Image (cartoon, rainbow, N blue to C red; front, side, top):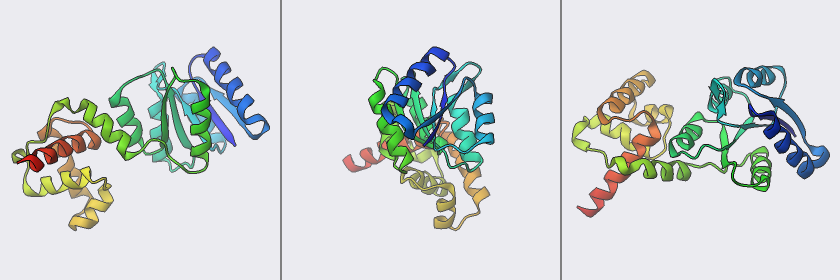
Length: 213
């Protein structure tokens, strides 16, 4: 198993590396990177199974790397290991499309090793339910005002909340992909959110209201 370890603090990398090498013994090869640019360069030069990412990387973010992985169809699975405790960051990690786990550094290295092993086998420890819980935590923002959206926009918002991708929404509603994207941009502007998971959180809260009424 080949692991790319990305953290901008050399001593932190040293500690994580020692822990992982102790756990996995000779079954792991670790390559270090201290910045987004170094990480992307390493990804372009060799194949990796796992990338362990800190979120704060000087001028960049570990999520820049996760998005790069998705945009370039790389097979590496990403595991976030960070001191950033933020529902918004967790949502962004989920939406990057390549993050299989999100762990906080106040935990020891055993959960990290378990997450790496699971991700290498194709499993994900960061799920739609985790993103939903994070959206609910932020969801003090309240529920969706359904009257602000057109019938078509509401249909799209409901399908977003059900976890469908843009392509799946396009197929379900028999719409062009560009139409779905344009509608989604309008929906974001109308309801005041910046991501599909936060939009989904508003829809979930509004469904609770409908169940009560």
